[in-house]
Image (tube, rainbow, N blue to C red; front, side, top):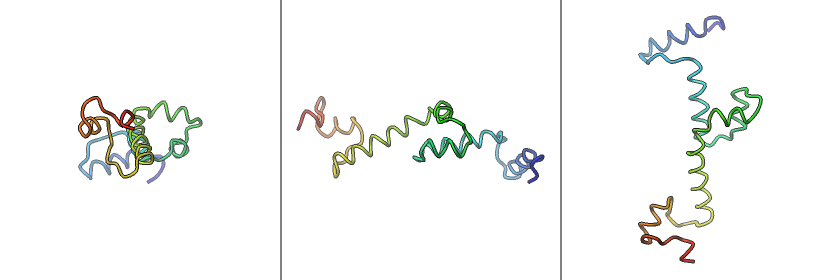
Length: 106
């Protein structure tokens, strides 16, 4: 792919593959979102994207944060209570009954 024709070549590849047209920049955004959702540190994603500051990456991709936060909470829970199969407050309420949580039982 010649640098001057990268977008034209990209459009041709998309068309031949039978995919819907997207902007090249959309792929960059998708890649960053997937990397963050997979647990790649934001600092690494920042470097891949070429952002000069971590705040730029975190502000643009803040929508990924809830997924990452849930995973972090699940990992912390697994470290604190190994062997217990809990993953959310809904499971705890079902397993122990309404109004009963782990802290009040210990």
